[in-house]
Structure formats: structure tokens, C-alpha cells
Length: 143
Ligand code: AMP
Image 1 (tube, rainbow, N blue to C red):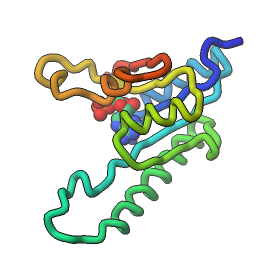
Image 2: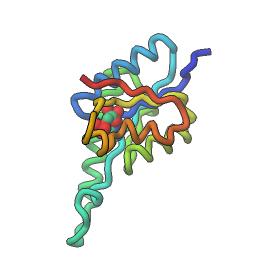
Image 3: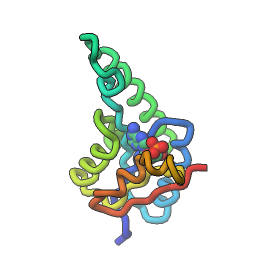
Image 4: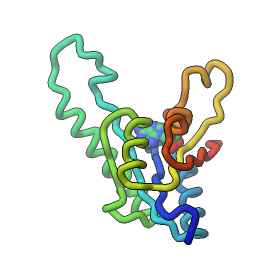
């Protein structure tokens, strides 16, 4: 049996995402693993702060919709069925931890910028995912 049967691939939907997806694809080809794609949409309320009362539901829905469409096109490109494309709302690290447990994945793949010094202190999603992960984590160096 392959070491990694089920892999959660976290995608930030920037132009860097294909670098992470290519690695996931190569691992799938050599192991036959199932791939699940996830993108976490951050709640708009976080960025906005909420000083003035405002209904952000529509904006949130638009962001979710755009993320689903983008994830769907990656799904088509990389042969990941719709049932394995997940868009969720929250903090990326927490959502990735939650899903890796719920879906019983044995590997999480994220991109990593290899930050140093002050940038490292500020933290990164890859660091956040690694800390508290319940399975192996592969950090793909983004170039
Ligand atoms: P960052 O530390 O934010 O530069 O992101 C590094 C990596 O974390 C990305 O290449 C993705 O694998 C993952 N990531 C960041 N943001 C998200 C997100 N909103 N949803 C899913 N994965 C993410």
C-alpha cells in the first residue's frame, strides 16, 4: 500500500499555486494517492474590522463564488473531481487542520516561501499548518 493514500493540497489561488499542484500531481503519479484540493476564503469581516455596520454577506458570497470557479478550473487542469474540491471560510491554518482530521488525510501539501528573519517572525501559512498538524506536511519551496 502507498505511504500516502489521501493528500490534502492547500491552494492560495495566486500564480504560485501551480508549483504546489505540480508536486501533488507528481506524488499522485508515483503513489496513486487521492488528491483533495482546498482553498480557504478569509472572512471579509476580518479585513474590514466592523466600525460601520454593513452587510458583508454579498461580498463574502462573491469571494466564495470566485474561489470555487478558480478551484474548479485547477480541478479540471489537474484531474481532481468536483467532489474533491473544497472551498471553506475561516483561517487557513485552522481549516486545513480541521479538514485533515475530518477527511483522514495522511499528507498535507502547502507552498513555502522559505522566509527568513523578520518575515519568519510574522509567520506563514506553512508554519501554521506544520504546528499542530496531525499528519505529515510537505512544504513545497515556491520559486
Ligand atoms: P503564505 O504563507 O500565505 O505565503 O502561503 C503559503 C502556502 O500556504 C500557499 O502556497 C498555500 O499552499 C497555503 N495557503 C495560503 N493561503 C491559503 C488559503 N487561503 N487557502 C489554502 N491554502 C493557503
